[in-house]
Length: 187
Image 1: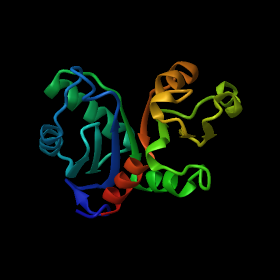
Image 2 (image 1 turned 120 degrees about the horizontal axis):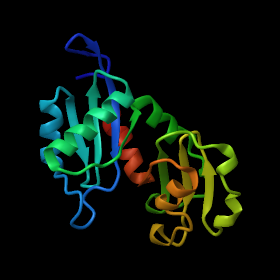
Image 3 (image 1 turned 90 degrees about the vertical axis):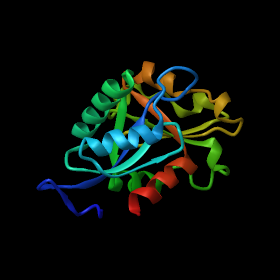
């Protein structure tokens, strides 16, 4: 279904769901095939997933906040786990990719991380990016871009740090995953 199509009389929009903390170890198990089936049964269309880490692209009749609430409820009811769901429209994700705040700096998509935030952070809470060196950090509106030359596992400010510091929900994806999600959103 095209992003401009209609579902049950409502305008449909292509949206990207970023689930936080699923399928890590034994906790928050959410099989992607079952998640696709559950979301389809709840009226979402063209539901696709990428990897096992909670990446979903779908067509939804509501706002991103409504989609996040519906997906979170579906996951809680079907899989028994309460996980945060951040949603970006296809256009918002395209803007994140186009911004590429680390162009010319990041040399490996696996070490280039985009941390998506649930809300715009208070600018007064954003620390001086120099404190993260050798990582290079840049701030977007609701995203934090980080180039981690020593690898993501050695990042100076992992997503849990951003959550505590900024008082928001955060979930991170490497640049390769973000680009793949955009390709799925544009398909």
